[in-house]
Length: 332
Ligand SMILES: NC(=O)c1ccc[n+]([C@@H]2O[C@H](COP(=O)([O-])OP(=O)(O)OC[C@H]3O[C@@H](n4cnc5c(N)ncnc54)[C@H](O)[C@@H]3O)[C@@H](O)[C@H]2O)c1
Figure 1 (tube, rainbow, N blue to C red):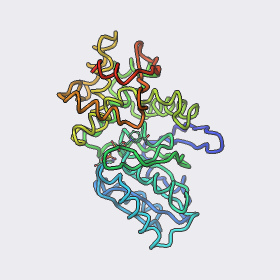
Figure 2 (figure 1 turned 135 degrees about the vertical axis):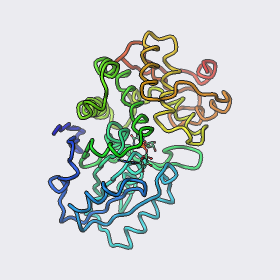
Figure 3 (figure 1 turned 120 degrees about the horizontal axis):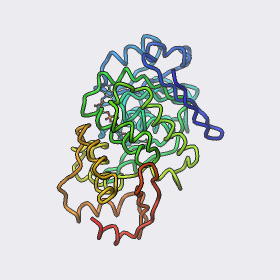
C-alpha cells in the first residue's frame, strides 16, 4: 500500500494506492454513515458491486456515461434525487468512476446544501493520476468546458489499479497522455522510465510518481493562480481541439496533439512522438486555424489580450510564459 499525503492547509487528505483496495473499502470508509455513490452506467458492474457489498446501505445514483453528463441539468437531477431520499448534510458522497463522474460528483458535493464531504474512487488511469487529486470540480456550459465549478478538495482518494484491468485500451492510453505530460513538465526520471519500461509492469509505482507530482503542485497553488498552471502543458490547444472535434477526440488524445505541437523543434520532440506512438496516441490533427483560435480566445484561461503558455524546453522543467493572443495566433 502506498499513501501520498496532500497537505493543503486545513484540508489535508491522503491518496491511498493499493492493488485490490476496493475489496477492503470498508477499512477506509465508515459503512454506518449515510453514503451516496455516484457512478456511470458504463462502469463494469463488478466494481460497483464490490463497493456496495462492503457499504450495503449506500444509495447508488447512476448517470449516463460520457462528457455530456457533466452538465448543470445532471447536477440538478442528482441533487433532486438526493433531496427525495432525504440525504442530509453529514452524508458522504463517493465518486466512483472516471474524470467525468469525479468532476460531476465533486461539483454536487461542493454545492449540495452548501457542501458535503466526498471521496474519490477513480477507475480510469486519467482519473487515478490526475483528476481525482487537487479538488477541481466542474460541469460544462454549452460552449465552454468546465465553465461552472469550484475548488472542493476530497476527504480521501482511494486508488485501486486493479480496476484498470477492465478499462478499454483507448481509455488507458488516454490517461498515458497525462502521465507523459507529468514527465515533461516535472520529472525527467519519470519521462526516461516511460521510454524504457512498460507502465503496466509497474503500475502502482507509476501512479504514485504522478500523484506525488500533482500533490506537490496543487499544495503549492491550490487555486491555480501560479505554478499549478504548468499542469496545462498542451492543454490550451488540446482543449480547443477537444471541442473542435465535438469530443470525438478524448481529453488525453487532444492533449497529446497539443504537446506534440508545443514540442516542435525541442530536443525531446522525437522521444515524445515515440512515446505517443507507443501508446497509440495521435500527434497530428487536421484543423481549421481560425476555428481553433476562436476556442483558444474564449478559453477560460485566456484574458482578453493574452494567455499563459506552458513551455518545456528541457524535459522535467516546465515553466509559464505569458504570450499575447496575436503572437499565439501567428504561431498556429
Ligand atoms: N478535475 C480535474 O482536475 C480534471 C483533470 C483532467 C481531466 N478532467 C476531466 O476528466 C474527464 C475525462 O475523464 P476520463 O478520461 O476518466 O473519462 P470518463 O470519466 O468519461 O471515463 C471514460 C470511460 O471509461 C468508462 N470507465 C470508467 N472506469 C472504467 C473501468 N474501470 N473499466 C471500464 N470502463 C470504465 C466510463 O464509463 C467511460 O465510458 C473530462 O471531463 C476532463 O475534463 C478533470
